[in-house]
Length: 144
Image (cartoon, rainbow, N blue to C red; front, side):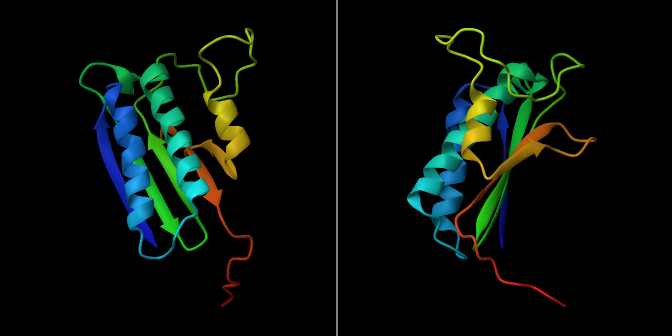
C-alpha cells in the first residue's frame, strides 16, 4: 500500500498542483499500474474537490492551505481533500440542484458522484471530502 500526502497553499494554482501530485503518485506507485482512465478520472475528481476547497471553505482565504491524502493499493485508491472550516457553518457538501443549465459552477460534486466508485465527507471532526476509485472487482479474500 502506498500512502502519500501534500499540503498546498489556498491559491488557484494549487488546483493544478493537486492534479499533478495525484497523477505523479499513481504513475510511481510500486504496487499497481492504475489504468490511464483511472488516472485521468482521479486527476479530474481531485481538481473538482480542490476547487471546492478554495471556493467553499476557509482554505481559500489568504495564507490558508488544504491537504490532499492519497492511499493506493493493487485494487483502487482513496483520495481525501482535507480543508479548513466551511465559509458558512451550516453548509455540508452536497450535490446542488442545477438552476441554470448554462452555469459555469455547481457541477463539481455531481461529477464526483457520477465518476467515483464511492464518495462522502470525512469524519465529523474533520473537514473535507473523499472519493474511491477501483479498477478491479475481485480483491483477494483476506480471512483470518
